[in-house]
Length: 214
Image 1 (tube, helix red, strand yellow):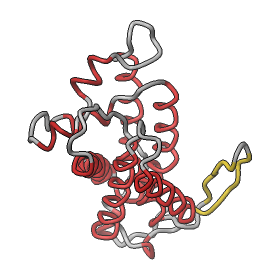
Image 2 (spheres, helix red, strand yellow; image 1 turned 180 degrees about the vertical axis):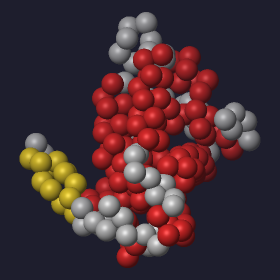
Image 3 (cartoon, one colour; image 1 turned 90 degrees about the vertical axis):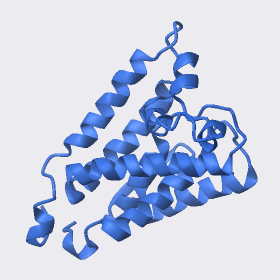
Image 4 (cartoon, one colour; image 1 turned 30 degrees about the vertical axis):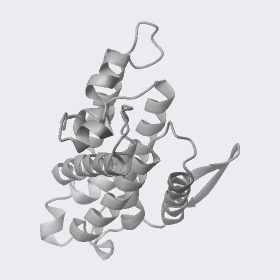
């Protein structure tokens, strides 16, 4: 239940419909774009609709800033992203409203793609996945609900920690990967870009923390 002022209460959503629609869309698209082997995304879709930094920097295939968000490499990639979206998106959408959440999600995803393209401007490797947008949602969740518990795995041990600490650890790890250049097959720069967009948009346009009842 929320304790928004009237203007904020009108924007809040009782049902996180956009979150569930985004999850459904990602699942449907994943199975429609599988290769003949049925394990990984078809290379045709990854190359045509994935984000290729060198193309973006030439202002070509700009539509891939959006389409790349709805493609995933394999079932594990899809499952992890959709789980994070479900956990963080539900509360954020209820707090800021469905229409604003959709704009927020897409904006974070687009900015993450631009950030990744700028820092990898010569790369011709396609980048796919919703992670950049979801890192933006994680940032919003940590700001709006800093003391809600999230589960983090330390080895195989699940440990509950406050959302604000979880988000801090995640972005710290991603930044370390970016600066070290390790795990090059993961677009860590897109994760950092999405998180930065999420922080900026939430602080600038999101509801005040005092207006949200935990």
